[in-house]
Length: 50
Image 1: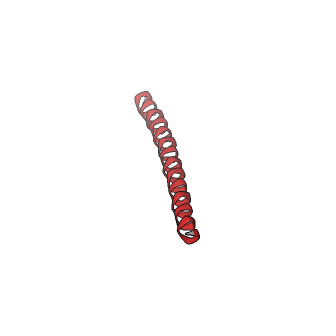
Image 2 (image 1 turned 90 degrees about the horizontal axis):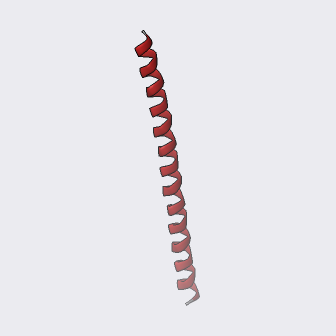
Image 3 (image 1 turned 90 degrees about the vertical axis):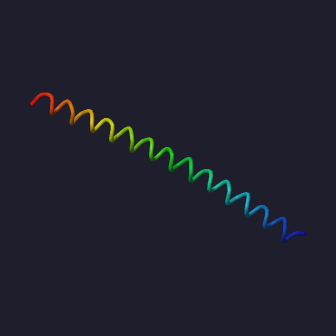
């Protein structure tokens, strides 16, 4: 019984870490997208001046 409980706890912990990883990946992607969008806008403005 104890071993089974430990197994469930490990699975729950892994799921928690996975959720955190997914969240961090989504946050990282959103930051990347926003930074790329800003850079793209700056490049577009620079091209318009020329």
